Length: 194
Image 1 (cartoon, rainbow, N blue to C red):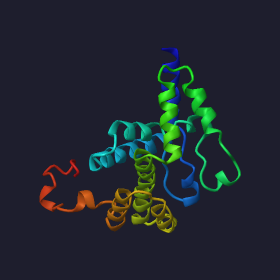
Image 2 (cartoon, rainbow, N blue to C red; image 1 turned 45 degrees about the vertical axis):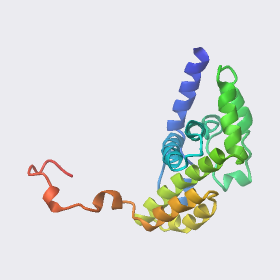
Image 3 (cartoon, rainbow, N blue to C red; image 1 turned 90 degrees about the vertical axis):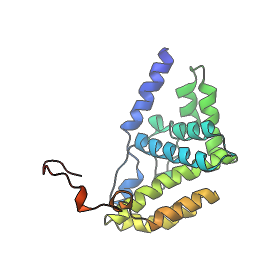
Image 4 (cartoon, one colour; image 1 turned 120 degrees about the vertical axis):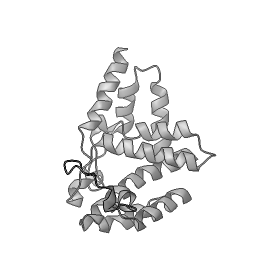
């Protein structure tokens, strides 16, 4: 159980590690853990829309795809030109004493290999998470995120990923709650806000 406790503390560190790309956008912020949650939820949705995919494998892959960053940090596209993180060693060191360590190593290797349907969907879920952030930041006044959207959309590999991105890019970040809103729904008590 010691190795499992250590893994849980290590995963908890992902809440403290910022995603580095936002520095270059000039706006926004997100931890690696926040990104992993978003990516995993997107994968859940994609699994529901892709009956031939193995949902548990897809969701699990997204959950652990950035685990190495607890040890390596998050490197953005500029940093990756100059620094090479040894993610394989980081994953092996993080999972080597676990009874299910090879499972995590296999999921991360499959994600990085981009050969299986689940790996391609996981890749797209990872990119769609970023697309959602870029679109939200753009909708609220950011200009640099707007420039990045076409590059990230172009990374998508699956038809489903492309369809989701198309739907996201024509929606506004607040459409989900503002459509159908009326002043009739405002509570009588002014201390209560919608």
